[in-house]
Image (cartoon, rainbow, N blue to C red):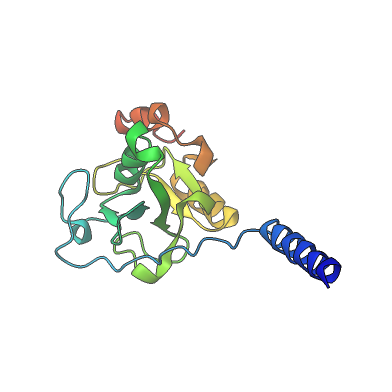
Length: 173
């Protein structure tokens, strides 16, 4: 009986070890939150809904509510700060291919990390120059063809690029 018990115990331990090797369950991401009329930008304090162009939201660790931003530039200035990089869970931006530039709709938020961006175009957001964000590369190309600029990916956005954008050095790139 002790031999059978030992075999059973070894089998159970092996099963437990193997179950620990399975793929981890993907993290459930918090959904974007509607931008209300009184919401202000986490970076500059401007009222978000009073300005055109794509907006952003960032979810950081240990915080239930997102931080909201009046433009994609304000969002990325926050995201690129070294103290915020490690705290970020995920961020959203408006898909301008699916909503209006003048008043982006809350149901058009997409993950910032999966978006395509057009920089150096002639459209202006709340703080002037901004990154136009798109879910589809083809929509970014159509926007670029109409308003100028250059298409980039999420990983191409850094503080140097944001500095050039803020100084107007990328106009109609």
